[in-house]
Each structure stands twice: as structure tokens, then as C-alpha cells.
Length: 219
Length: 222
Image (cartoon, each protein chain N blue to C red):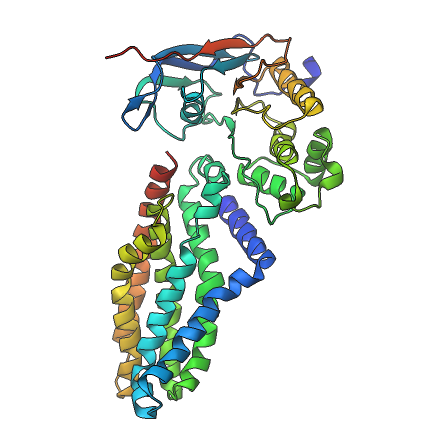
């Protein structure tokens, strides 16, 4: 695996992200009790909690889309570069009127990832969508759309941290296996992964560390 | 950062090319609205010539407001907007790119079509010239302010009506000086003062509206 090692990778075991006593709110309601955990380079963190417990809100907070109501987040990154986690939300961010290849290309270009044509094709190939690359997104099923959105992961060259919201949703068995492989490989290369899933995460190596969100104590 | 701008404008134009009907709607609306006036007011050429600039400007404003309601809504609904906002330091580029594509798709066609409507209302050539010049300076203001309204009302149920109520008052100066330029030319005066005010309005809006729009988008997606 050493040949895979990207130059910017944090050494395994270093905390890429430290979360201290973070609380999130939705309106006036506190979603979960103050939560602390650290995400090491090369590890997978699986956030668990009941429906409406704030898993998505926590991930959006980690991504920087909203600020925590209390506590702090510390991203460690190479000096001089801002931390740039890759956040894949529950929504696929695909445009109905673009083709599969155009949609993926747009998302990669937008994020400023240096990509060539081969990267897009290769990533789609990886997720079994190469044959549909010129099809319009509106003609795809839910599972196929999910695969296209996830193909972005396969196109990444840098080892930025991944924040994945219910990535296994809508995928068939083969898709789940594929994605588990891509996530495990990213972690083994030294990338960090934070994900939510209501089903057990089918990854053995590295073993996902579980972070459970609990009901807030009554004030 | 210029990368984000180019990527977004290219995508919006490509999306518009895939949905040509949607592109023609604002200009069709504009045509219908402008053509109603001779029917309602009566075919007196003198009267029509007098009301023409005002009619064209009001119709342009309404066409811009109608088309701008969807500016961020689709990207918000499918998650694209979040992905855009996650790009570090790109908020202003996003807002400006959206305003530019909106202007290219609605403002520019109106500018091009305006001389035809000027002829329809029997306006003189210099008057048509000043109408077009005014629209060139004024329609970008409408796109920028419309984008602000779209961001402020993002995710609200009666967003479209609210947008019009919030933004139309802000567009009043553009209408007054745009239509005023034509009136000045028709009465044989110079319209340079009007153009200067329109230009100042454009600069003022181009500097402030994107910042406000960026902040509104941030709040809407939080």
C-alpha cells in the first residue's frame, strides 16, 4: 500500500479532526447531548443515532455548512492549506438535464479537483456506470443516481477527509460492496472517513469506530 | 475563484440550452405584456409614444422578477447549492455567476428585442437608442437585485410573491431613470445625467448586492 501513499497524507494515528463537546440545535431544540470524539488519519468513524437525532446536522456542522451551538471543532491540516473535507449529502447534487459524465465533471470542476477526462470515465467505471455516462440523469433510477454521486469518491486523488451522509442508501448489494471497498481503501491509504448509516457498515479493515448520539439531558 | 465563476456560468448556459422553452418564457411574457397596452389604452399614436418607455421598463422588470424566482431554488432542492457553498471562498463568485447567467438569459434578450417594441410604439430612432442604452445599464441591476430576492426567499412557501414585494421597490430608481432617459431624449434634452445615475446604480448594486446575497444563501442553507 505504500505506493498509494499521497504526499499530503497525515501520518496514521494523527487526529485529522477533533470534536469537543459539540452540540447542535435545530430551531430551539438541542438535538443531542454534548459529543466529543477524534477522527484519526486512516480511520473510519460511524455516527449512529435514532432518526431525528441529528446525524445529518452533525455532519453538516463538520462540513462547515452550519456552526455548532456549543463546543468546538478543530481540523488539523497541512500548514497553509485550509481543511477541505469532501461532504456528500443525502441529496445527490445531480442535475436532471445534464448527462452522467457532465454532472460528475461539474462537481469535480466546482470543487477545484484537477481532473482529466480519464478520471471521470475511470470513476464511473469503478461504480459500474460507465455504460450510462452519456445518459441524462433524469433517466436514472435512485440507486444509479447514488452511484454517480459516489463516483466522485473514486475520482479523488488527494486524501482529504470524507464526510458521507447515509452513503449506502438506495444501493443494491453489489453497490454496497463496491462502496465499502472504496471507503476501506481510502482509510487504508491514510484518509479519514466520517459516515452515518442506519445499517451495519460492512467494513472489516479498519474497523469503524462507533460514535453514538444520545438524547440531551433534560434541562 | 474565477474557475468557479466560469464553471457555473458554463453549466447554467448548458442547462438553459437543454430547456429552451424555459428560456423563451420571459421574453414571451414580455411580448404579451407590452402588446396588451395598445389594446387597453387605445391606438392613439401620440399616447402610445408617450407611455412606451414606461411600458417597456415595467414589462422588463416583471419579466426579470418572474424568471428570477427559480434562480437558486432548483440548486437548493437537489443539493447542488450546498456543494457550491462548500467551495472555500467562492460565495461571491457563485452569486455573480448566477446573476450573469440570469442576465445573459433574460436581460440580454430584452435588450435585443427592445428596438422592435420601440417601432411598435412608433418611437423615434434617438428615443429607441436611449431606451436600449438605458436597458443595457438597468437590466443587470434587475438581475442582481432579483438574485438577492431569490436568496432571501429561498425555501419559503410563498417565496415568489414575497420576492416581488421585497425587490420591486428597490428597482424603482432604475425604472425612473431608465424611462426618464427616453423622455429626456424625446423632448430634445441630453440623457447623459440619466445614464450617469443608471451607471452609478449598477456599480452600487454590483458591489453590495452580491455580498448581501451571499449572506442570505448562507442563512438559507444553514
